[in-house]
Length: 134
Image (cartoon, rainbow, N blue to C red; front, top):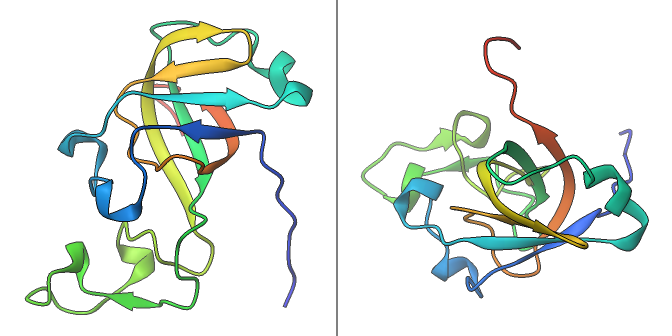
């Protein structure tokens, strides 16, 4: 099986300290968080500004990578479902996808609202949200 190597470009700094603290979705009470950009990648974030909407791609480092089926929302009343049809953090390649609004920018950091990733989560990429196209 082919493999890929990803390296973090930064890390999430959040009041969410563990998986049990994190809401399932951002709209369910996720707090503001700071993305610390590593020095080697700070130039890549130069044009990100307050008010921008961005996609934050994370590596969900505490996920169980052998999980293939889950009860959605961890509710056993829901039928077992393949993880590719869910937003479960437990999956073969635990990449998190978070749409957030930037609330502030400083030297080496981007502040965002409603990020459900826990403190210390590696950030693998930032991308602008582009409306009206794929």
